[in-house]
Length: 70
Image: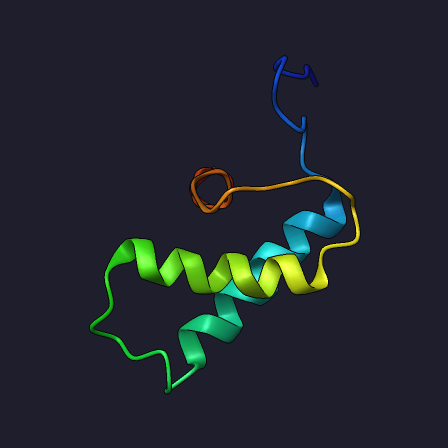
């Protein structure tokens, strides 16, 4: 793949798995609630992702959301 200058580059397999795990955890978390905005929802996913991410790459919630849609 190619790396876009100014970005962290391609996601690793571990990061892809972590996005899936974070999405699943957030979607099943009753305390988060289903009436939240999309931005809030992805902020919760990013918080979980950041806690568990060991890649050393910074990923914004928008970047995570775009990767998920891919």
